[in-house]
Amino acid sequence: MGTFLSKKFLDLHAYTPGEQPQDMAYTKLNTNESPFAPSPLVEEKVREEAGRLNLYCDPECRLLRQRAASLYGVAAANILPVNGSDELLYFAFMAFGDAEHPVAYPDISYGFYSVYAAVNQIPSHVIPLREDFSLDYRDYCGLHENIVIANPNAPTGILLPVWQIEEIVRSNPHNVVLIDEAYIDFGGQSCVPLIHKYDNLLVAQTFSKSRSLAGARLGFGIASSQLVGDLSTIKYSVDPYHVNRMTQAAGIAAMDTDAYYKDNCRSIMENRAYTTRRLEEMGFCVLPSSANFIFARHPRMSGEALYLRLKEKAILVRHFKTARIADFVRITIGTKEQMDILLQAVSQLLDDSDGQ
Ligand SMILES: *Cc1c(COP(=O)(O)O)cnc(C)c1O
Image 1 (cartoon, rainbow, N blue to C red):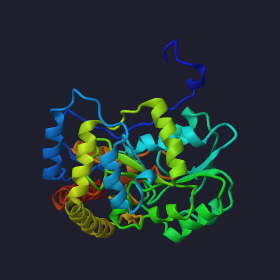
Image 2 (image 1 turned 120 degrees about the vertical axis):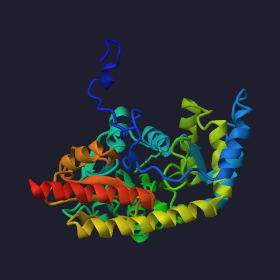
Image 3 (image 1 turned 135 degrees about the horizontal axis):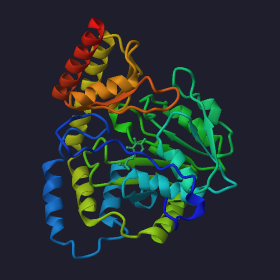
């Protein structure tokens, strides 16, 4: 650390993003991106917008908000566009947490929650998932703390039904419940309609996973106009022009070509079922996933060995050296061709280790 860093950050452990290697071509199944390019209309609109980069973008993102409001069935006042949903998480931790208002989240979940709590000096209340990595919603009912839950969860892929989310939101009326729906488009049911009934529910959505825009950075906070107002205050205090021109145009074009992305999600779900079945035939335990990744472990090969040997074969998956999940690897679901490359490599690794 440098000599000038504020003392309040001395113990900060930053988030570690998945590898984005530039050295060679990998079959990249490590950061849950879409294997599909954005729709042609997105490319066209981004190119047009590039010619206007000399001008600041609309800080209110009016067109984008209107379009998103009709997609999600809410009013424009219920939507805050953000520079990737990570930014929404950051704004929410900043807006609603402090030393007297801890935040509760599961022990196995998205790594950023603990980092955002730490950077904002908010105490974390970490609640263990069950042995099988499912979440017992009753652990969160009547907690009287702010809560953040990814649904489906990451990196497990396990989905909670909407009625359980509703119980959590209903029983914590004086606290904010943030539901991170980064992976909701791969077979889950969104809890967005509940924002009309509960003013303490904040839903995070992203165009990074199901809508092929990870590199553009676009997400949305969806909530009561009161919560959106508080989050806007933070946004205008930090960076009013956070969602750039090209990204605003890309987001609108993506929503105008919704059918294309729905088709892509359908093929990801088919490839997920196919990959799960094939891995199970090879002896893997695969957690039931409602996301565009699966979390799997093999009784005869550690998560780290699998990760390292696949990397030697130019296939990247994600491994976490975290207690409880160190035996697993998280595999992003890509195209059928990518999955066949993975399955073939895994099968060969298992054969090789048999022969030793
Ligand atoms: C990928 C991911 C995000 C962040 O996505 P952005 O690219 O910042 O929109 C948020 N939450 C979870 C659980 C994720 O996996």
